[in-house]
Image 1 (cartoon, rainbow, N blue to C red):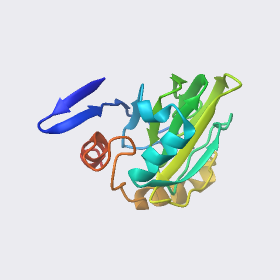
Image 2 (tube, rainbow, N blue to C red; image 1 turned 60 degrees about the horizontal axis):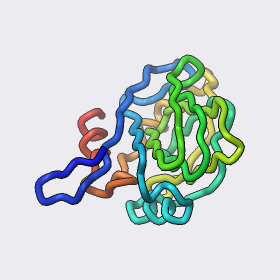
Image 3 (cartoon, one colour; image 1 turned 180 degrees about the vertical axis):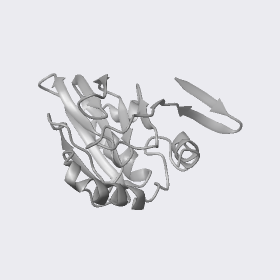
Length: 177
């Protein structure tokens, strides 16, 4: 869906989803943003340029791990540039989402994600605000105190990876934290 603001170019608006704490996978008080039909997220080079232009760097091209995991030291954006699939967000008891070419998922630090089945051609461009260094966590409860401290220390991004500095991420994440 595209909406226009006062004197502002048309802007793609995301779905928002707040996920419950899953114990080992803490998720976040910040909402996950899911954009659909993002024109610039339909081809890998265009998606990388879009993310880079908006300060989300360190791009990689691959799929989504088929095990539940999260990042405690960085927010992550995933642009679906080919294929389709089902992702589970929030851990083993989380919510299922159908994803397809042109979708962009913005995951706050701590958000569990897992590929629960996809087409063989699923291809994702991933990136992090200001090329943040990311870690890979699988939900070990013995690490929970450290994980929560790391998540709390992750700064908010300067810009929305799809719509830039004036995009909805800034408003939605700054009012949620």
